[in-house]
Image 1 (cartoon, one colour):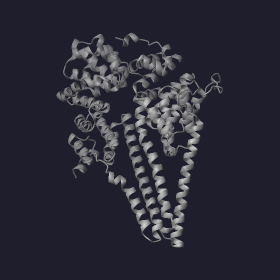
Image 2 (cartoon, helix red, strand yellow):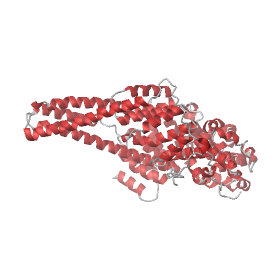
Image 3 (cartoon, chains in turn brown, blue):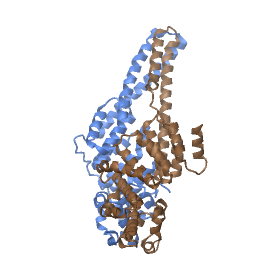
Image 4 (cartoon, helix red, strand yellow):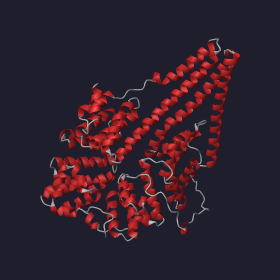
Length: 306
Length: 306
């Protein structure tokens, strides 16, 4: 009943599921190890029927194994079809997430979770997509619950686990759980070194930068400036968040719009519109309001006259 | 966003880019791919599969006939025949299932340890009998491996050979095979071949990731063949799609579009694209993915460089 409440309340209104609802949903649809006996059941039935057919003296015994074989084949066929359906649904969620349609991705992943409880890989993937969607929809506390649930299932040094821990640390920073985030980032410092120039190390650098800005350590943030451009490149256009935070650090430290702040803000707005940056990090609003920096924004209009 | 094709009709290369029919297919590696071997393997697999299916149906019909009309008992030997047949079927299924289970592992290894992936593939390809779809999937993985190691001539040969056969349950790989075929032919400077593969891709159902790859390859083809105006059509949509790609591919796409814009003397757009390319990808990545970017000097680079 609680599961039903959690599901329906998350599905009905436009409200996003809170952390209790997410925890309840994940608990109700937790991973179940597939039984070996159930897996071997078709074979056991087939052998049993064959033994009966060989021992019983009846005309029906001749056709009985064929019925059993047909039954097993139909069962296998249904199971494969069901698995393919689940895989196609998961792919649909991934595609929605890739297209940044996070609300739709969340709704679909939320429903899909119930059908993946005996498929470990798909189950983990679905939770990761739920967590990512919640994170992007700014439901940070709920996202942290989903991330934590998945991280607990994975080995600590597994690259996928590291990436999830970094994403959780960013969500913790966004939700002002600064101590938890600091703890995560400290523990990962050495593990991340093995993944230089990858999305894992880039995510870690971004998390560090967010942490430094959130804790007003602007001088430390500026210390990363010489390598930040290269460090953040694997993030693609999301590197813009890091560039904007660097601009903010320069602005806060020097207390007026400087050349460096302008430079980083130009880089950020080349990759992403200022509105999107401010929507993700509210503190960037002050940067957006700075008149000098507003002038350095160059929104792209490919059809504008030259 | 329309992800299923920016343009439905692609122009063929101009007469100055005639296909070189005399170009031999270079196969120069320790385990060279020979299409005839694939043909023999497929023929053997198919023969066995149809033999199995035919025997199964014939035996079932005979059993039903004996049971209904002749009132036969299991002494007729059909049940024993069934036992032999069931064991043969189990062995066939086990070999196929074992190889099929290795496929995800091989896919992972291609990214992290290509040598081990190749060793696993070599072992798996020697197995007999195998289900047709599983064998084709193995050759698909071999094509990925060759494409990753930049053996484009061999990749094109494998893709072309696999695409001749009806893919059946392995039809999900068709789009990816065509994408690899296009990419390989572009790298081999076989523009006619690339055009044919791209045209086939427009009749193929693709997922979002594959659609993004197709857009990238189509842009590359258009810029390589000098159809700059076509490359710059629906630019905003293409940029939005590029932003969904991994950072190096996103950077390369920007660099290609910048080349086209500069040749069309759309300097404003070319500068903007070039600057974004510079922010998104390293020089090494651009060298590898779009070597022509050297001709495009970054205008206003001092604005972006610290």
